Amino acid sequence: MTVDFTGVNIDRLMVHGIGNKLKEESVVLSEQCVDVQDKSLASLLGKFFFQHFKDNGVYHFGHINNLKFNQVYQYVKSIFENLDSFEACSQNIAKHLYEVSTHPNIKKGELYIAYLKGAALDGVIYDAIGIFKSETKDAYLRIKNTENRFSVDWEQGVDTNKLDKGCIVFNNLFEKGYNVILIDTASHIDAKYWVEDFLGIEKNNNNYHKTKILIDACKEFTKKDFIEGKPDKIALLNNVVEYIKSNPNIELDEFTYNVAEKLNRSEELKEFISDFAEKKECRDIGNFSIDKSAMKNIKRSLKNFIKLDTNIEIKINVSSGSDMTHLEKGYDDTKKMYFYKIYFNREE
Image 1 (cartoon, rainbow, N blue to C red):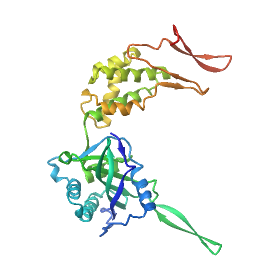
Image 2: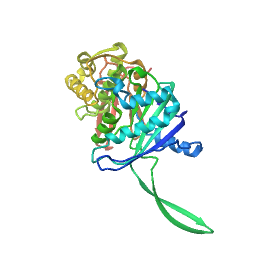
Image 3: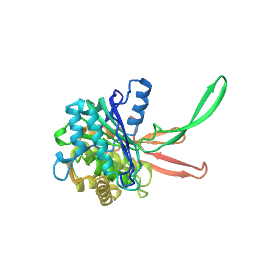
């Protein structure tokens, strides 16, 4: 999944004040859209809204009984079908957020609902709806110069680098709950009330997601202390790529045996991948088909070289049928430095 917001235009924007209902704080509903015609303001809002999104998978709206009972889904659907309903539906979204803001640790803040044009998901342009919440306030100095006399004052405001929560809903696959991407929230409380109680979204359990989980798990596995040295770490990841090239249908037992048996770590890798997938709420990791588009993005992030502090790089191109006996690491007591020794038959 790749997203691109470089061509996004914020077409409409509503801002509402959302308090904590449990603490009897109020909800303040705006009655009209914010003017975002100023280019500098639009640029700041773009930075505020979009810089925090990472590749954390794709979600969709859901409901235990029927999708039609998901309130945010219904309001978003109404906006996509009739843009004239934007103001009223944004107010209803704000009311719904207020109703679920009942945990004592939930902070009051501003809810921003934006209608976006030109958002790209996997290279396809869509209209989208952004739903964001800011809670953190910072103090800012305000300097004034009047006839060469400076005065210093301060005010509270929102730091554009600190967006607390957010999601973007793309106008596609409405019958399956749309495609939704999410800002990660570190707090379990935030994740539950924002993701489950308010949005009611679930992670897509498709092959793209499974492919990314599999590779991410293997990358994390190489960070374990029992895999010594970068050559073995790189070799394992290269084994993963080579195996996937010739075996697009993954069966976890066979996969882990082929990529990690030479390190005597196949069972440990299998257990690690299963635990990693469970933590990421990814089901059925044991048997699936590799997503080719996911692999293109993932391969760019895999490093197959050892970068040394002497400005020398060693590139390792190891297939699953090779071993690392042609590369040895040692320590020179005279120079007080580590070294690599490389064996070969001829130069190519």
